Amino acid sequence: MECIFAAAVSGVLFALFGGQPMNILGSTGPMLVLETIIYNLCKDNDWDFMPARFWVGMWTVLFILIIVIFNLSSCVKYITRFTEDSFATLIAVIFIVEAFKKLFEIEKDYPVNFHPDDPIPFNCSCSSTCNENVTTALGALAYGAFTNFTCTGTENFTTINISINWNGLTTAECSEFGGSWGCDPKQYYGDVFFLSVILFAGTFGITVLLISFKTSSLFPNVIRQRVSDFSVLIAIVSMVLLDYFLGLPTPKLTVPSEFKPTRPGRGWIISPFSDKNPWWLYLAASVPAALSTILVFLDQQITAVIVNRKEHKLQKGVGYHLDMFIVAITVGIHSLLGLPWYVAATVSALAHVQSLQKESECTAPGEKPVFLGVREQRVTALFIGILSGLAVLITSVLRIIPMPVLYGVFFFMGFSALRGQQVLATGIVRKVLECIYTNHELKYIDDLLPGSEKKSHNEDNEKIDVPYKTFSSIDSVSAIVEDKENGIKPSFYVDEECDVKQRTTALGNTKL
Image (tube, rainbow, N blue to C red):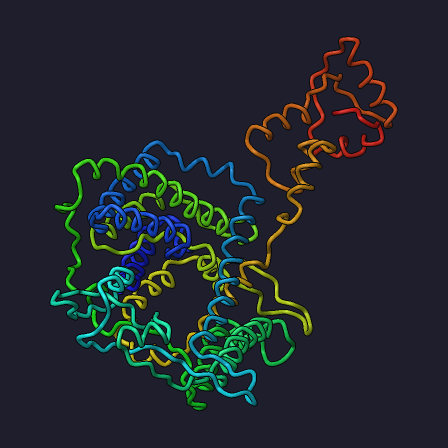
């Protein structure tokens, strides 16, 4: 419920006021890891997690506002295409790996009997029973570490309290403690796992097939485009219907049915103070907040740079500072309400941009449509936030969606994010090329850092003082270039975009 509420709050706010509405805010892996570390730290020191997390969030808001005030978002100019592709590939690979990992975890809950001719093994365990002759005092001390069950017995007129983990006992130990040893036949769900694999592969395959359907020669272009736009939805509905009619107990999506916090007994508003937390903890929270700020900045700004790539042909200007300000507001609200912190999600943002691409509708038969740009607006992002919040009203429908279908969608999102990556796998080669070629020549491969670009400009665009005259041949240009050493001071220089410079490449290493 907290995730649903957070998606609604952050989605609506960012869609209405964000500088780049193409971005989609969501929960990211780095932020989840940080919150896990904070939780474990509080658990080990017997602190209340939610109040401590509140102060970490407030410090994070302060640090982000400092970034906004001093225009530190301008540091994104140091993010090159190689950095973008590295970050996007990392997130995409995480999506793909987690999708397969979750798929194969289904086999643990629904095991497959690969040897049907062998006797079916049994699940045996010791059940809890108490009697007066449970064990001796020495045995009680030996098994005092078990904490799952407490049994009281008497030995030599002395009461003994024994905590026993009955499920962990062997047959001999179960008999010693007076338990009851029993075996139940192990149940197999082979069809469930295999159907899950089919649903996973079917969702991914149908989506990819329908996405590429727009480049086929079947049906008018309008139909092909609409089928491609709704490819994910068509794949989900198809696999849900297949699972429904087969009737196998595949794992389904678990969603809350009531609008209330997941943890019983807590309200939506988090109290900043707790008797368990020392006063200095509110100041020490600035340390993890600094780490949180770094993660927010990297997640948010690298994703924004990826969305604003030149090949997307976006017309609206960027708004890095404004976006960070809106994220700071959402972090503060989520800290007060006990919601997860949401920042720009790379894979979701790229999927959003790809879904809004415009392509030419009038093409010759057999010709592929031409990419025209992206439909830049705030409506889709706003409705994503609103519908995320309204998901609690359709829980009866969401509960019939098999989890393998969602894993297939995650696999497709990671797969689609990998498409369009450029110089990533040749990073080392790119670095070696700096020893061979000039920065001006390397600009055609990758963007340069500001310092390198300035140096390149001074080196490659060196002004040459030659008299203003008409050259009849390359030899004339060569002669005047050589006369530069003799102190000739003309009134013009050859620009790097000029045709003359291009024709003087035969002069060897001479720079004009």
